[in-house]
Amino acid sequence: MLRPSVTRSPPKRRNTQRISMISRIRHFIQGSTKISPDIYQITVMGANIILIAEEKLTLIDTGYRNTSLHIIESIHQLGRSPEDIGLIIITHNHIDHVGGLAELKPLTSAKVAIHRTDIGQRKNLPSARDQDIDIRLEGGDVFDVLGGLEVIHTPGHTPGSICLFSRQNKLLIVGDALRKRRNVIHIPHKTLSFDLTQAVESARKLAQLDCDTICFGHGLPLTGGIHSKMQDLVARITEGV
Ligand SMILES: [Zn+2]
Ligand SMILES: [Zn+2]
Image 1 (cartoon, protein in one colour):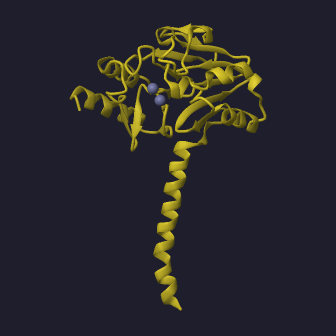
Image 2 (tube, helix red, strand yellow):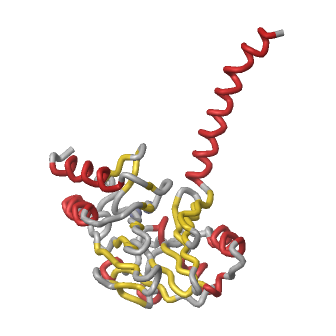
């Protein structure tokens, strides 16, 4: 009787590993991650939206087109409503970050903010058009969110890419200014970037910040050991790797 149980055991472990891999992949595509009691990452079709729940709600990015139902569902799960959204900040004018704006904005009371150099229609794609934008950002602007959410202009991926930094929470939201692969931080893909030299300079700027958590435009947040991971990135970009 012992034999079968011994031979059954290894496949069971493999199965558990497989399920956890599948759930990680699913989560990468669609899911919700609680970053702190009042900060959530909502992932729809592989694109991340950050929801900050204070007296008013703040959204950072809006995902692809047709993602508003998922965002609204996450807001309802907190016992809040889309009308509570007072501010939508767009990290950059790409379809996977701004695509949901046109359908979401009318359901909210939100002002929409994006860096002034990223405003404009992009080849018939959903994009941040002049008429959609209420606040034209510059580096150094600070929102009254999380005790002061600072705008850092990090051009490279697009001319007006921004990151958002909360000193209070030691949280850095980078959009696509940085990306993560197997817990290693990288600059944006060359082919997807407007100006790689600028992207490198922006990464150096971000490496000077004191943060514990980075939220990316795609993938799960990175927590812990950020300082050494950013120093590692700076060393690699300095060597041109
Ligand atoms: Zn992008
Ligand atoms: Zn993206």
